[in-house]
Image (cartoon, rainbow, N blue to C red; front, side):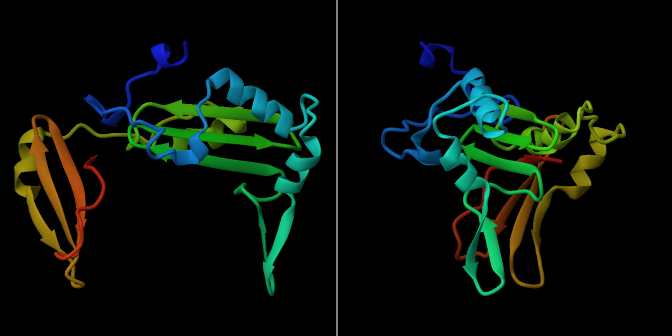
Amino acid sequence: ELKARLATGHVLPGYSACNEDFSVLPGAGAIKSSANDLLKFVAAYSGLTASPLTPLMEKAQAEHTLGPGRKRRLVWFGEGPIFEHGGLTFGYKTELAFDKSKRRGVVVLSNCGNSSLAGDCWRPLLDGRWPVPAPTARVDVSSYEKYVGLYETDRQERCVLRRQGERLLFRWLGKPDQRSGPASFDL
């Protein structure tokens, strides 16, 4: 039933990705879930609902000594009462966060793996604010042509800018002997 409702993943807005067969490469712990299930998970982790897993969840939230002067939570990022963890697979991106002191949590699901949406909006949502995108300026797309080309850094690392219709796309290539970097990103 869930598979029939799966949103199509995208590598870039408007460019769909092939859905991975997670039985071959079970990324992200092979966890398949829904937004409702993830919200239940956040509610249990943040202490809003009781769970038989509460003792284990408290252990995962605690800081553990990794070495001299180094401590870290087991699976969570963030400081103080803020806990965050995200995931990324080809065509999808997720952020899950909660604030134990405010007893508030958020789950952000995106079906565009190269979008910054999930990473940029969880904190404002957790703070009870609407995530406002950064201001943008209109640009004459004919000016894109002067930026198109292959660029190289002083360390022989390369990137390429290309135009595709009204889009200017950036792709990091790395060093010549390396495999090509991730998919292109809109600029």
